[in-house]
Image (cartoon, rainbow, N blue to C red; front, side):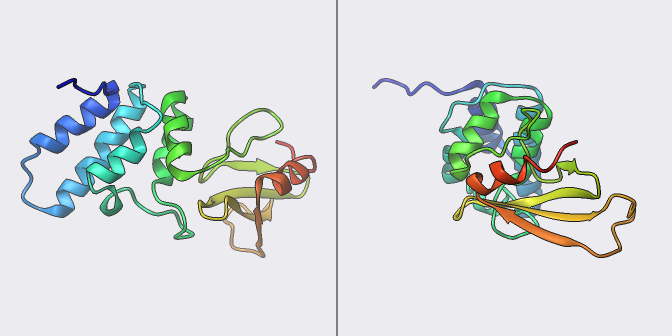
Length: 170
């Protein structure tokens, strides 16, 4: 029987999954979340279906985490992959989430907690809705450092985002 080729990231994550000796689901879930982030930050290679397979084969629904909107599982992995410029993890996560990337005018991918600015407002990404393919942002006045004043909520699909980003710059 021919063995299926696995990425270095998947092998690393699966090895921990197979050999873990924790005695609690809470600890296991925490460890699994951390080991995926470790694989991302170590810039291990992910194959395009890895996040799909990790979630399915290692009960990721229990430990991937949800975004603040409650509509996007695993957003923390995507943010970490973008922060550490792990392009293989980025592409794998985008396939898992069915997410078409949201790109700034400067060519940067947006992720949860990304911040962009215009002349008056600071916009912070709060998450994505994978089903509808929308990105969610909250905006405060630039001078509202504590973010306690009036806020404006935005959400866009990719086409709407392309129009909106023409108005916003860093």
